[in-house]
Image (cartoon, rainbow, N blue to C red; front, side):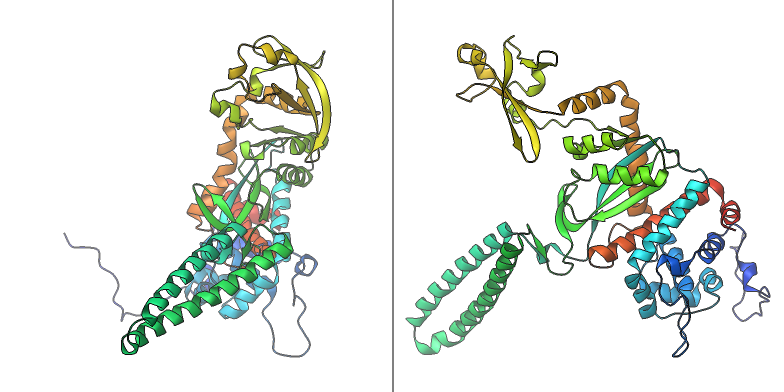
Length: 475
């Protein structure tokens, strides 16, 4: 049986009379066109919305915005690749009405409008809210590391600089020793070798001066690290590896896994980011009460208290970080607190009463102790402190105890966390191939991330509602 045969390249083909006939009714480009056309781009902060009276005509920002939304939806983010798509992609030809901006124009548009792009993302979030796609009851918060345009070799910390300078000093000492040995040889034998060693020494001296200048910069600024290519990027733990990048935070609604809010930060941990993200999600959803679930990286008493004060109920499992547990000693969890009498009861039955209070790291801490430790037979299982065991208690620790009770009473909420918030990160990093940034500095990568979040949310809503219902919603 013969194979399927194609059409001869020399044959005459009658194409449809209009470009519009190539675009199906359910094609996402039809929604992109309708969505951007109804935006007030000047109010959102885009430049050149009103054409200049003099000079060469510019591209309308609506056309460039449509191009970028289409590109991020289809894994095409490079300005040069987008330029190529305008010349060969029928969907882009339809979307831009056969306009073909060059890659410099395309790149400058994204670079010059980071805050405006964020507002466009918020406009679509508002549309999702009007379509009642947010549940507004449970939000999951998480962070993930996205690579920056900065290699690990161009990121320095005080410890790394100290180590590099020590290595340079050792190499200089070795080369100087070798030079002394060659100086004792015949002149005709040492010329070429000593010249090569002196070049290496000059190179090391240049590096030494450069590292010392970086040390001085870090000392004056008080920063913990410095990046040379993207000054806002930071070295942070990403899984089991250390990468230079940004910490992207997301608040995701439980109903349809839609991203309610996002933020690009250069914080190396998530510990202080719970209440800002939770409060912004509550403000966006415009609800009186909101439940928030997060992983153990967000466990912080002050953040939990801030959420509760804002009408947000957090669900975070307590991490086990006790040093005593690793040593096989009694942990604080083995001591029972009696709130009525304000005492702790140890595993041996002794009571630790309140002794004094103090402020540590802006937290009001109370200390509890007992003289019974002096004669306790189980002291070796409890503490190595000569003064006996001490228990510390934050004045608002009852809030953490109540949260622990909520987590234990509703384990299904904790199980939902991965399903809710890790779904967007997995889709963005794997399916959309957007786990790294193309721009530099915090403001610009923030605008770039807004395009990624916008593309993700559009893709989700198209799956839920379809293109025609979305077009009707913005018409």
